[in-house]
Amino acid sequence: MNVYSDETHMAALLLAEEAASLPPFIYMGGLQRAPFVNLGPTFYPRIQGFRSTVIDLVFVQPDQTLTAQVTRVHNAQGESDHIPLATTLSISADSGATLRRALKADREEHIRFVRVIEGEFAMKVDEHAPLDTPNQIDAVAQAIADSFSAAWETCSREVTIMRRSKPWWMDECSVALQAYREHGLPEDWKLYRKAVKNAKRVFFDSRITEISITNKRT
Image (cartoon, rainbow, N blue to C red; front, side, top):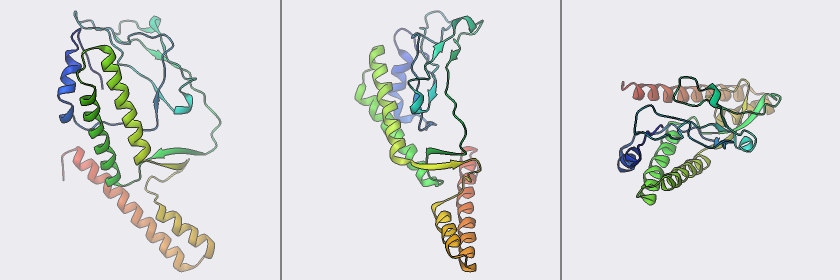
């Protein structure tokens, strides 16, 4: 979210007043902000009276926050009012399996996560009000980021993502598949197929509902 603010912090103060009515945020869980090597604004507005601000950030995996330092590349700015950012990421060999944190393929879990961060956002803004100085704004921004990370850790779970991971796969599928592999009975195979069918139905029904709500259709 970009907030353009003048010397009186009008935009940030208005944002604080309307925090409770803001729409849901899309949050990329499991990432952390990479630090800058050369601190300073990343946006220089051409409108007279508007202050230069830091509205461009880089987010990386937690284990790369110390090495993936961000540099503002002034000589690549050209005619833009934004300064390009550069960083170096370490890329290891692909083992085919990666551990990640993710929300369950369940609409109720998604709604729970969004409600948690919505409540935390409004609460943190109220706790740090008034927002009259840059330091106060930085403090509330950090508090909100910490709340988002805590909500992600609480609502998500660690999963293993393979090259051909199926987004609809559920724990019931794993249990049924393991039973079939152990015994090899036709009944176990039928139960496995039933679990897969049910998992697909739940997953795609939730996606269809999500799309219909986004497009305001039923």
